Image 1 (cartoon, rainbow, N blue to C red):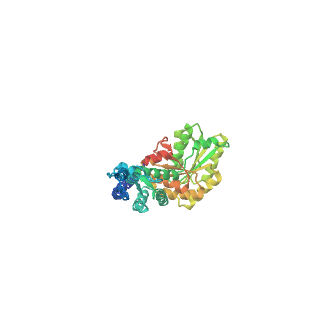
Image 2 (image 1 turned 60 degrees about the horizontal axis):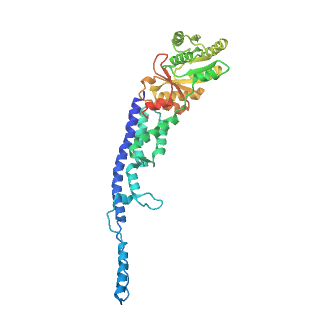
Image 3 (image 1 turned 90 degrees about the vertical axis):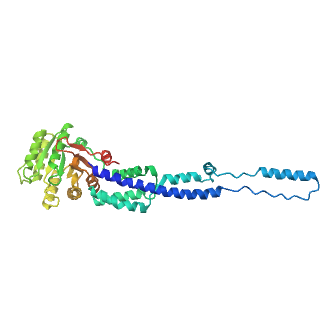
Length: 387
């Protein structure tokens, strides 16, 4: 996961390092000229001898006195010497740093100008778009990065690492911290805890339902599955097969029956049998279907789920973004599961769906096995990006 984005982000930040080296060469030339000027200023001439007006001499004793005075003046004169690096360092003007320190600072630091940033900003935005980051998210990231680095001074040897660190902060701010579903279930006093899963067909929604049920079972929590997809052929059988494999009860109706009633029946069964959680699978024809959205809204209204989870594919990019926007508008989702993360080389979908919904990614699906699901970890995600 994230291989392409990691490589391209690395190449992009390296360009600033190269720019830093070019700017350093310019600074060195500027420093040479300043050094020449400073040395000329500091190459002061010996103090002029003070002429001593001698009065008319009358006696040899007076002549000797005057000669002694002249000799004293001459011994106070400073000899001319070459200006060394040490001379430039010592005795800076009060409140000012030494010339040598200013020279060193110019060589070791670079300042990124707005012009410098604009050269590479379009490339960065395109890089993000190519890696499944939605346009509005890419624009925000570029804008935030510009605000944080333009006009700032960076050490030349650390410019690449510092830009990466700032980029890491921006991504950290975009991603919402996930919560623990098991803890939510345990906290609810009036059981069962009801979870509604939504999303279009083919994203691994039904498999994700079974994976969560298996995960909860390992944590000592009981659940029942509701086969709310009464539209797609073999969907009920698919969920029943999962239920048999993981040892979890499935409540189902007939094809074409009201999915809201199936969810309601599952909740009543859970209450009667003191089951901790109800997981409701739903149909997912297409996210633009008015009938589907009305159906999802009805299930949510009747079953009153405690948690509504959107399931999308991490490899679909902007399609997943449009899907999650639609479902979020209709029923207000609470969390996200991204399937097929194990074959996602780009990684931008995770940034996008989290940003547009302001909801956390809870899990990443990483295969077909029931164990192939991992809790989303912001730090781990960013580490995979190479930041």
